Image (cartoon, rainbow, N blue to C red; front, side):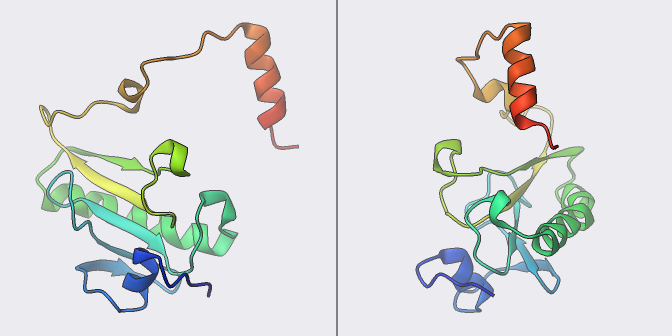
Length: 142
């Protein structure tokens, strides 16, 4: 298991910092966010230090997303919310503040002031069909 002594989430996983754990498995742990965007805001992190989703192996990603799956409904229910936003900021440019993979489960209610992910982007690209085809070809699993 890799560990970064300067990482707050690694310190949490190592038991050096106290948090309110709401779920865990062999490779991941979930706890309430100390600075919640909504009551019940939960973070799910791999126990090993990975900065980005693509750095995780299959076992770690499965463990993280299994906890997300198990907890999403419970978070919504506990917060008396009808839905949740499940988000990952994958790298500094995407808004990742702690360089350790973490999945946010944020309970959502009508009128909470937050919007859909599309509301985050004010400067959307204008892509032609050819641009879209070229991007699809570059991204596609082969």
